[in-house]
Length: 465
Image (cartoon, rainbow, N blue to C red; front, side):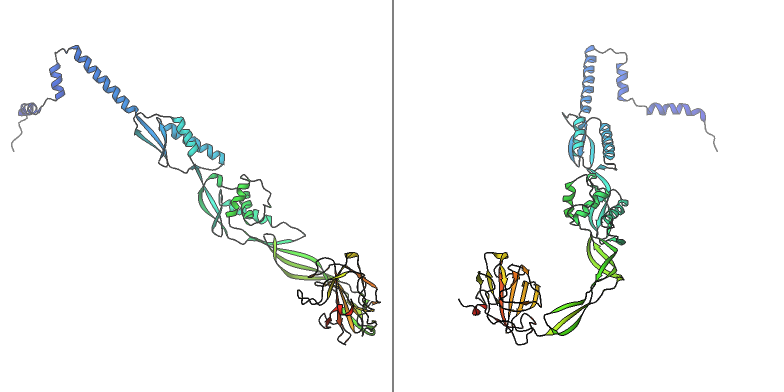
């Protein structure tokens, strides 16, 4: 192999380098100016051009601003983006401390550098606009009632506090009741949500809202609310809750006594008297009482204990027919007075008596229309205080009295004061004080029996005008 000739390399390399070298334009200008002197006017023009260019470039750069916008809506221009970013951080910290919870702007805030000819930066105005227009939000937990959103809370741990407060309203021990169970009928849950920090409620406020939604009139918690009446108005849109409790209640109750009869054929059937007085007994009854929002919805007896046995009342009752002691001639049952509603009128075809009014009203004595035996005296819903007298062939009836002076079994004589006029019972005729007077024809049995057993007759047929 032929060795390389290193002596030939420098000469060859120099020729290649010379052939490859090319002067740049700047180098040509430098070589041309070398040794030459320029006129002062050229230097002055060159200086003006350079200064004007620098000033123009500075002015161009001064027209760049940071455009601040909220959700795409421009609020102002600033020079220093860091100043606005620091303000937003400080604003967020102050609001978080104020609400005692982490908050952040709900809107998107953008700072974008743009060229704005004749623009004007005003950092203070931008800060004020941000303070006024930013809406804050926080991460919370929405309490739900049967999966319906109800009230936002700070955290899921406060849901159980709300349930406890609601339960406490209806679990106060009164009258020795023992609480067995308490629960909410509705399903209470929670879901994450983002809301305004002003909307977040404390457990006490949430319980107050739900109680108002349950239509309880006003909160029984008696708590001072941060938002006052606004919270109560908001309750109208909330689902109602129902707290169900089961209590064990013990009560001492009366055991009514029984009645037994001893019959005596030497007494009239309208007569009776007590041989052995009855006495009610006592028992302790244990109930399981179910309430919903404090109102009882069911009661179940789970135990009884007799404290005192009742004593049966023994009554001697007559079986003989009452004597026919009437004269057969009827006396007008009041002194004076006039008829205000007649017997079976067109307006009242079912009116089987007459209504008698007297100006003295309640002070007016009612007289027995004939001698006889009182077979019934007492109170009924329609008749009010009433008296039925057996005269033999007829019965007379006196209704709506204010007070009765005779009792069943009493013997009365014609013209005797037996009662005072009144308006007790259901007065379908005259609504004021009056006497409803009837005459019934005896069916032959001599027993009153019922109100429809003995047929009525027109009382006015027994009185001549």
